[in-house]
Amino acid sequence: MKRQIWKTEKAGKIKALRQREEKLPKLDARHVRIEVKSIGLNFADIFAMSNLYSATPKGPFIPGLEFSGVISELGSDVTSLETGQRVMAMTRFGAYASSIDIEPDYCFPITDDWSFNDAAAFPVQSLTAWYGLKNLGDLKAGKTVLIHSAAGGVGLQAMAIAKQLGATVIGTVSSEKKKEFLHEKGYDEIIVRWSNFYEQLMSQLNGRALDIAMDAIGGGIQKASYNALGPMGRLVTFGAAQFTPGKKRVNYLKNARQYLRRPKYDSLAMINENRSVMAFNLIWLWNEIDLMKDLMQELHDLNLPKPHVGHEYLFDQMHDAIEMLRSGKSIGKVVVTI
Image (cartoon, rainbow, N blue to C red; front, side):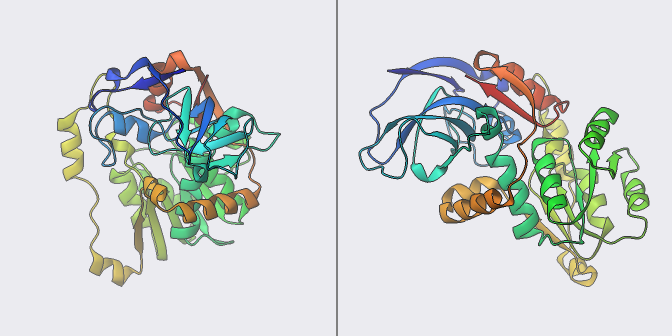
């Protein structure tokens, strides 16, 4: 048997990603084989292909962190799952494929009312939002939360989680179109970011204390968010979209300038101001399977609405899907179907 994959021989250029066919190996006794139906795209994919992500594998690799599909075969030692079962799953790279072998611990059942696209859009963005808000941000009812890139995959899940738990939510977006979309979703406090973002934010707060800021942009936006925090406020940072590569290549000179100008935080000043910076990389959870499973159960118990899948592409259109995500124009999740 064979499978279709998208593989890059060496990280550095997105255009180096090529579609290929390869033979499936013998199934490990501890693994399940999944016939992939949908793949969720993430900014980490783009950064990995561009060699801007510290966790990127050395040498050739298949990108992708999450997918959904049907279990087609069980390893001889597997008893917790069944063939024919619909699952969503997470993998430390390797999701851009038509068939995937994986340990059962990384698979989670799909409810009957969710499509494969819904399921492929759920794990990474939901875990990011939940771990950032709850575990690091100490989210509670009545707190005021700032969520950047609120119309993106993580942003929408973070907005939904914060609202469901009784927080006051302020979202930021890059365009009026995205603001209108969020208004339609029932969110009223939305800021279209401009160069005077700090003044915009303070005006929106109107004297309220800002308790949590969720940021994956970096740069001046991140620093302004930190400066707006009230006492005991927490900046939770989990990415740096400011380093997103251009359409053709990585601009290393531009990235170097941005790196040198990145926000820096004085621990002594933070003590005096009683504010914190919390940072995390979700891929760390792959080595903390018990915590990951606990977080997924907590998310299940929240009974969140289906993720918003804003853009669907076919497997052969992988580069188009990646470009939509890279462009910053996407709303919700970008999903590739097989």
